[in-house]
Length: 533
Ligand code: HEM
Ligand code: HEM
Image 1 (spheres, rainbow, N blue to C red):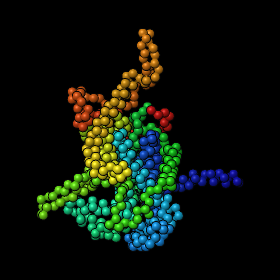
Image 2 (image 1 turned 90 degrees about the vertical axis):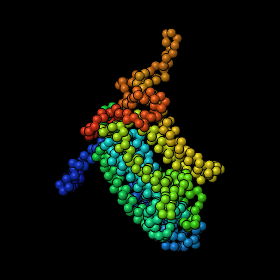
Image 3 (image 1 turned 30 degrees about the vertical axis):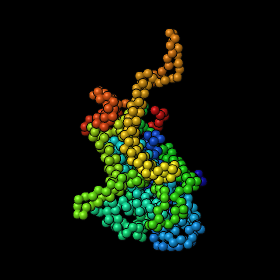
Image 4 (image 1 turned 30 degrees about the horizontal axis):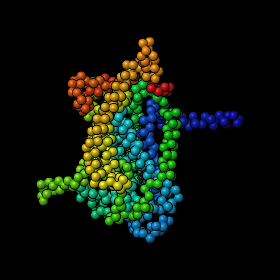
C-alpha cells in the first residue's frame, strides 16, 4: 500500500507535465530551448555580467522605490545624521538621507544599486568592445549590434536620471549642466528646456519627472530591448572561435540544460556577490557630505559617474567659439552645442552604421558565425584602438580639475594638454595598434613555417648552435592572417597606413565572399567540448 503511494507520488511531476502539455503544447519548443548549445569562452561572459547586474539593479531599485519620496516639497531634516538636522531641503533629499541612515539595510541597498549601475555600464562597454574587436557584429548580427548601441544609451540615461534623483548638491550640478546642454540646441532649445523643467531651472517638477522615467519607462524599455537582444542571440545562435571541428555552419558547445544553466546560475550569484561586497566595503556617492542642492552652490571637483565623464570632458575641452549666424539680429550657436549635442549624436550614429559601412567597404555579403582575432583584421582593430583612446582622453579631461588639484598642475595647461591629446593620441594609437597586429601576424607566420620554439638548444657537428622547433601537430593554425596586396607594397611606409582605410581587402578566410551568398543557418552540434583550441 505504502509502496503504491510512493510510486504515485513519484509519477506526480510526469502527470502534472502531461496535464500542462495537453493544454499548452509547450514540450517541443521547451525541449529545443533546453537542448540549445552554447559555445564556451570567457569573453562571452561579458554580456552576462551586463544582464546580471541589470537584474541586481531591478531588485535593489524596487527596494529603494519603497522608501524614496520623489517630491520637491520643502521639509526640515530631523533624521539621524546630526550635521544636517534643522536644514531646509527637498523631501527627495531627506528620503535619500533616511534611506542611508534610518532604513534598515537602506545604505547597503543604495550602495549596491550604485555599484551595480557602474558595473552594468562597464560590462556593456567591454562587451561592446569584445563584439567589435572579434567581428561578432557582422552579418547576420548587425541588427543586434544596433539594438546593443541603443541599450548603451538607454543605460546611460538610466544612470543619469538615477543619480539625479537624491537631489543633493552633486546631482543638482549634473542637472544644471543638462539644462545648459538642452538650452544650447538651436531653435528648439529654450522650448525643450522649459517643457522638461516646467519653466525656469530648477523648478520643482524635474525630480518627479525623472522618477517616472527612472523607475518605469527606462527599465521597461531596457527589459523590452534586452529581451529582443538575447532572443536574437538564441535565434541566430552564438558565434564561436575557430577551432577543431568548428565551422561557419555548426555550433560546438554545451547544452543549455543542465550544465550551462547551472553554470550561469552560479555566475549570477558570483556577480551579485561581487556587487554586494563592493557595496558593503566601499562607500559610494555619500550624499550627506554634499548637502542639499541649491542653484547658487556648486562644489569644486564635482565628478559625474565614470560613463558621463567623457561628455563632461568634451565640454571642458571645447574652445569658447560662438558662431553667429547672419539671421535676424545674429543667431548665436553656443559652444556647448558641439561637444554636448553634435558629438553624442555622431557617437551614436557612426557606431550603429559601422557594420554596414565595413561590409560595404569589403564588398562582404556573406554571413559569419566564426569570430576573428583582432590581429587578423588590423585596420578594424586599429580603428577600435583609436576610438578607445579618443574616449580615454575625453574621460581623463572630465576629471582634469581633480588631477590639477591633486598634482598641483595648472588647470589651463591640462585643458590644452587634453585638446592637443585629443588630436594626436588617437592617430598614434591607430598606428601603434596596426604595427602590433602586423607584428603578431608575422609571429604566426614564423610559427607556421618553423614550428613552436622549444627552448632546447642543440649543438651541430660543425660547432654551431640551433634551437629545436617543434612542428605544429595538425600542420596549421585555425586562424588565417590576411594577405598584403602587392600594389600596397609599392607605397612603402605609407602602405600599411593607407591600406586599412581605403583597400577592401580583408577577405575573411572562413567564408567565401560573393554577392547574394545564401544565409548559413548554423547547425548545432550537440556535443560537449572536450578540448579547447
Ligand atoms: C539600468 C537600470 C538602472 C540604473 C543604471 C540605475 C542607476 C541609479 C543610480 C546611479 C542611482 C543613484 C544612487 C545613489 O543615490 O547613490 C539610482 C537611484 C535610484 N534608483 Fe536606479 N537605476 C536603474 C534602475 C532602477 C530601477 C529599475 C528602479 C526601480 C524599480 C530604480 C530606482 C531607483 C531609486 C528609487 C533611486 C533613488 C534612491 C536614492 O539614492 O535615494 N532604479 N539609480
Ligand atoms: C544592456 C546591455 C546588454 C546586455 C544585457 C547584453 C547581453 C548580451 C548577452 C547575454 C549576449 C550573449 C553572450 C555574449 O556574447 O556576451 C549578447 C550578445 C551580443 N551582444 Fe549584447 N548586451 C548588451 C549590450 C550590447 C551592446 C552595447 C552591443 C553592441 C553595440 C551588443 C551587441 C551584441 C551582439 C552583436 C551579440 C551577439 C554576439 C555573438 O553571437 O557573438 N550588446 N549580449
